[in-house]
Length: 304
Image 1 (cartoon, rainbow, N blue to C red):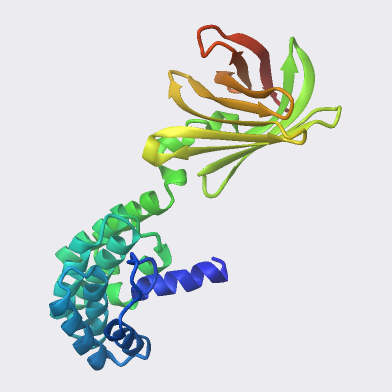
Image 2: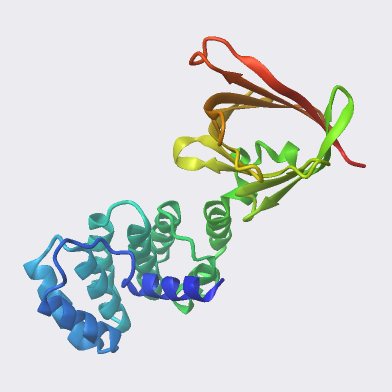
């Protein structure tokens, strides 16, 4: 974890990062309450945020910070109540996940293990990504000592590192390796495809004997349930597209941009022939997709 990530994670857990901002700057009361929280003056901060939640009951951030102060004071039942309000008010995403995680910690400290596990599961399904906190936070010690924690940890691994666990991220795993790129049986280039970012990204480095090179990034985009493809060559040609798997093949469609030819629509089909051979069919259209022409038809042969 790099230093910036560590700083952001700390602020996130404190409830001081990632919160929605309104057009107005925080008023004097909000600024004073935040200063008390940052200084660790928990009783004063709790009183300040209690007043803010009464005057602004729809402020998710005020409820979140009230919960933090009450938790630090050991008032776990009242902290659970505050985090519950924040959890309901925050939209789906990192801040709601943070409120759920905080609520889980408070339940655990109150020895309420069932709702603690439930809140931790909600945090993970909403995007909580700090596996180190789940494995090492002292407030969760009671959960880690419980046999049910194994299931939660398995959920955490799937949610936080989906590229290592979910099948959709492995749909193009047949591309990983070192290849000779052939046309009509003759080698015209070499390719190396590697997995990065814990299985969330495939990177291809392609090179021809004449000095032409290209790099391609392939990744699964979960919100759209599609694969994305982006390629840049050393001649400034760019291809960008999205695709889905049909049967054994992956079909991408998008735009091929070059300095001289402008923008051309393309489609690319990747099909494993067997464990050591993959066909790459690249086609273009000049009539909006009514007809397609083969630009190249290649076979990737795994290098021995």
